[in-house]
Length: 436
Ligand SMILES: Cc1cc2nc3c(=O)[nH]c(=O)nc-3n(C[C@H](O)[C@H](O)[C@H](O)COP(=O)(O)O)c2cc1C
Picture 1 (cartoon, rainbow, N blue to C red):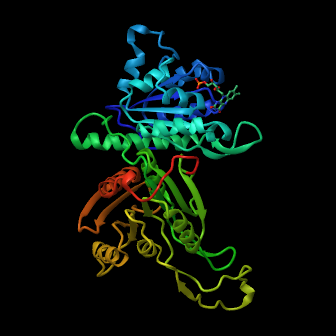
Picture 2: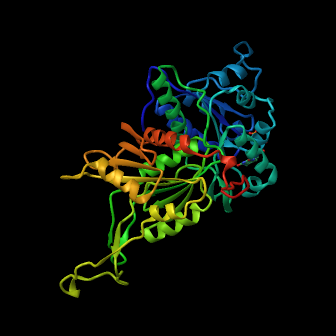
Picture 3: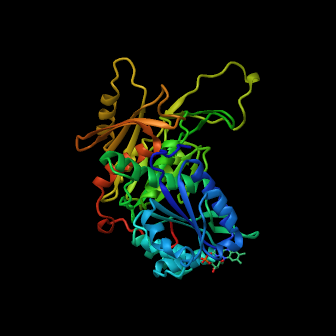
């Protein structure tokens, strides 16, 4: 987990509303303080019925109050919001979303939400019926339209034996999303030599992204496959970065062992053919498709129904057949205004310049952007850092030096954002109903 710089600890207000998942916010608090963030917890009165004040105070190292009357001399209902770099509400109840959407200021958390000028992220959790109710949908739509990030809850086990949409995503993933929001602000601040750029608001609200991640497996038999070392970290970091900027994100994950990105809808696939079907199905309504998965170029012609045995005799050479070129197919089926981004993980090699390979690939595929990254030597697969050159179909070349996959993702998204048609001017309709 990357630690925040001790010189200027990013300030996070962690709002906690009164839902059963309030206990999970304790872990979010823990994760953020351990990565060096200065966290002020602002629970609602109802939240304190689930987890008591001493827990929040002891773990954050700050006093905790729910109302505007305690310590009135400090005018906390104004100062907390003004000074925050991020306000994160975990869990956001149906009631809290309603109060925030209507601009109520009847406790410290809602007052803080009105005074905050930094990014605001809500992580809702409630029963499916509450989440799908038109009143909650309208409140979520209002908050998103105002520039707040309201992530979709996960689908899974709810309070009792029931399950459905409304479960709080994993606390560690919520903390990772918070760090992605702050990473963007932090990098902009470093670029212009100021403090944290609290003014960096979500710029991808209304856009729908499809991001492939991981590496495909092409099975020879039920247990053996041709695969690659892609962990899915870069694709997941891109998903997190897009979500932290307000986008709705579908991740098509090929054999990724990481926890699912909070707020994303994840579709799991194994082979290139499955990945192709999932990406095409989702791309029909996407403004941006980013192909960050390492997709096998070839697959075995046949897949044995049973495990190939040693006793079957000397092995036959494996006959391979070419897999479909998914990026080229997406280009051919491109929706008006849709942006297509490819990744080219290359090792270079004798007589093969990385960028020449990339330029040739960009032209051959017809994508808008191609992120060329060298893999191996501690870069690319299965590591935290990455470096890349982003080639544009307009002839641009943007060098991104070695950095975290989170920051590299934001740099790539900056290039995407600069090329996007306005969300509401696009022919691709994105409704804010219960569909993802
Ligand atoms: C056991 C229990 C669990 C609850 N869980 C949730 C929940 O997960 N999500 C939700 O929106 N409300 C939940 N509620 C209802 C809220 O506590 C109630 O709407 C309250 O007014 C919320 O206040 P607040 O939003 O100010 O924190 C729960 C209530 C009880 C008694």
